[in-house]
Image (cartoon, rainbow, N blue to C red):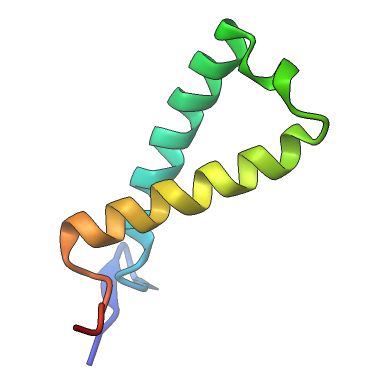
Length: 71
């Protein structure tokens, strides 16, 4: 069972760290994609942003072993 961490008197869920790591990777990737003109290929760039963040979060959770994968 996952337990909360105490940080300055606040209870923080353990999923917070992977979410922040994925957010930092997303912001870096988004900045690179904007400079490269990657978003001109898509009519809905917001959907690309959502998919990119979901993939990065999945990758971080998989690499840290926090994602329970059946198999």
